Each structure stands twice: as structure tokens, then as C-alpha cells.
Length: 113
Length: 114
Image (tube, helix red, strand yellow):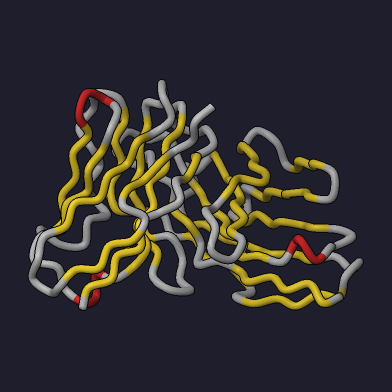
């Protein structure tokens, strides 16, 4: 079946602009996660959605970052007034629920110039 | 919150030898410990996981051990092959409400020398 998809695959934006990154999870997966991975670095947790519960936003690095998950499916990560330090690969993952395998998408490579 | 430390950061192993990667965690309530493999330019993929009700789990050449008392777990890869070259991430998670995310280690870059 279809895996997790993300769009765009690459995004180049100017400093100060807003960007939206999209994640389509695997159908039926109730949990959705966003991570950030800087070049050669680990996976930095950003935000977690589980069903209809309030999202865990504890990993968002600043109030310029926000995310939504509409209808329990598609999620959008928005970064406002982008800065050069926001440059990274943004990975989305979904899972059937807590304590289950997370299936990662291919990521969106964001470059802020 | 949870803190996961992973060692070593880089590891080079002769093909056919074994590789061991170690992780420690801080939250004694954590009860799920997956390992992910990320090949260059690709997405992370789960290779094995262990839950706190068992001490060891094996899948062909890969095994994971868990010591809950010491709060550490390890990945063992035997008879290493070139395709094992990748970055490996450990992670820990606990079921407490409001803290259901995975906390990842910083990764180990494993290189298999032919």
C-alpha cells in the first residue's frame, strides 16, 4: 500500500518568508509525528498528534513553528518568518498508535537563503 | 523528560565482524525501545524493537538487549555485511499521558570495511 508521502520534496525560500510543508500519513494511522533533521545530525522531535487528543507541541523550537492535522489525516507544518537556522530536512512519520513502528516519509529538504 | 545517550557516534567494523551500539535512557518509566536504520539519503526505517517485559530479542543477524535496572539497551549486529553501513538511531518511549513521543539518540554512523 501507499506509504507516508510529503510535499514538496525540496523547498528553497528566502529568509523572512513563510513556508508550508505537507504530510500525508498512511491511511488509518492515528498517530502522526514531525521531526527535524539537520545535516548529519539526529532526529529532533517537533510535534505529535494522536487521534482527537490535543497535540504534544513540546518540541516546537519557537512560536514561528505551528502544525495542524485536519480530519485526523493530512498534516501541515508551517514555519513563519523563516531563518537560516531553519534549514534542515523535515520528516513526517505515522503509526497505528503509540508503541508501534513509526513509518517515515521521504522528508522535505528546506533551504533558507 | 526523557534523555537518550548513544555511543559510539562512529564505528568502523571489518566485514564479517560484529558491531555493538549502546544507548542509555533516563526515564525509568520508559517501556518501548526501537532501533531505526537510516541509509544515506533515505528515510529512517525500523529494524528491531524491544519492550520492557523482555530482556532480549533477536531477528536473524540483529539482536537487542535491555537492562532495565541499569537503564541501558544495546544493538548487536553479527556477521556484518556492506549493506549494514548506515546511521543507526536508538529511541525510548514511555506510555505516560502527555509524554508519548519517541526520544531519539544522536545516532551512530556504522561503516563496514570490505
